[in-house]
Image 1 (cartoon, rainbow, N blue to C red):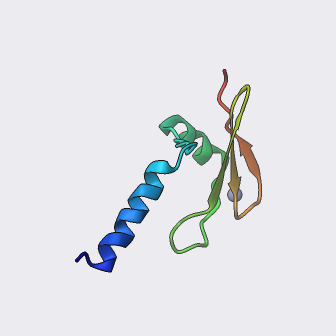
Image 2: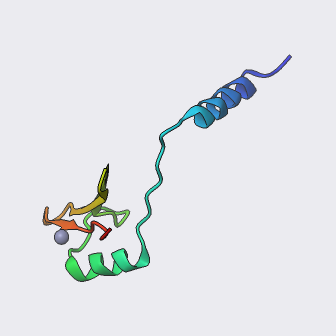
Length: 81
Ligand SMILES: [Zn+2]
């Protein structure tokens, strides 16, 4: 007899392992510095979050955009390939 909670956890794990095509994108220290120089808006959110990151994998490389939720500007951080 297995408790229902165990079944639910097991299903979640299976789902996770079957999740192909998941890509993990990282913001490097260099990018963070660029972002800080580019934008100095004060976050209004209590969590301090003000940037939205967009990652678009293309045939030519990875397009990285950062949007400031406060001034609505977009910074292109696309890596050179
Ligand atoms: Zn801003």
